[in-house]
Image 1 (tube, helix red, strand yellow):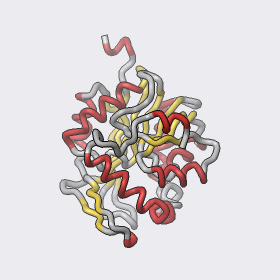
Image 2: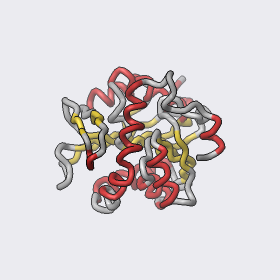
Image 3: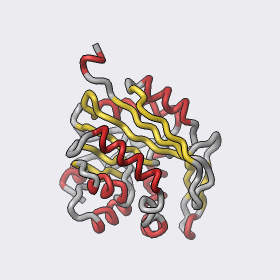
Image 4: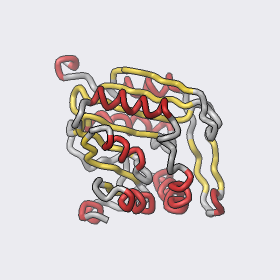
Length: 232
């Protein structure tokens, strides 16, 4: 735990929404099993890597980005390998962060909630939310997307990935751990509408077929916070 972690409110305190507490408990329980299962997730998905590469070009080499909901840090490390300045990998789960720090000692990881980022406004060139909004209820998405918008500098880009569908998928007792969590599946069009309402401009909407280890189509949206002259 970093000094910053020690001074911030615990994401599991009494004022924390129940879905945040449940998400943290779930990933704390399964962290090592999850990290082993998805160890080669990026290397096995060339289309996903192409999206990361395109996002990197849009942000610009050396751009300051945060990986929000970073899990064991695989995406965080990949973004850094592409030439981005990854200022932060953030996650609710201390168990996930322990793996991220162990495997990526040169990168910064902190515990916290995407809904309340300890980052100055307009301080980032890019934000990545890679399958990390899937535990956020739909009525909390506007708040989440406003927070993404707040921390992005004008002209900055957001990349968000999620599973496509109309009903959540419940995972119960994974790997024998006594935890349960719903994984929200959404349609890209209404998600994009909420992002536009938060102030973003669409750049790309990618839908790909499920990979062999997936059960549904996957969506990847890239959006841009308008430059100041476009906001006037």
